[in-house]
Picture: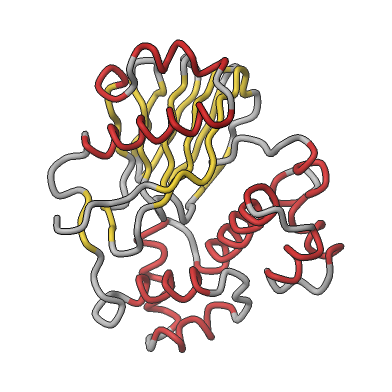
Length: 255
């Protein structure tokens, strides 16, 4: 490629004991890297289920539909990151060998790393993981003018995460019918447009609250909610925790 992909680490963390990891139909706008040091958790996507064992790691491109479940606590290393907009990847969960991407000294130090050290480790691991992708898995994204209605919709929402026009308005902006847009969303993400839009709003709410220092009111305004109370109600219903508690706890490891 003429322009190499530059990784931007958005969030990373090591959680010694993840208790709750039950999510259905997750589909997020950023890349995800997951490594569980203990067995007992699974990720399923497009009809296939992958058991997360200590010898494998997962790399999940944006907008890839997946669900998670766990039967017991496990130690968890996660990285949320982005690549330049002109890079894209097939929407599938990639299973990688841990020994090929995580150096032993990094694995040994994860639980004691400082914030800066963890970010450096995350960068090294993610770049190694991208190198291990099958040939052709990472490619230049098509221009929006020639992409599908789904691609155009993603571009619109990324520019306006607080979009509240609903499926009919989104279909109009994409120059297609509601039925066509719904069909493409279901095929690409496994989700109807309304559910996907809510997922994106909540993901962006996490970005604003945890990574960009926005207040609850600023986040509610940015995402088009009537007020902070309406936003807090929706946030609590979605995550099972209020925005205030979410911020105070430092966030929870969300897919």
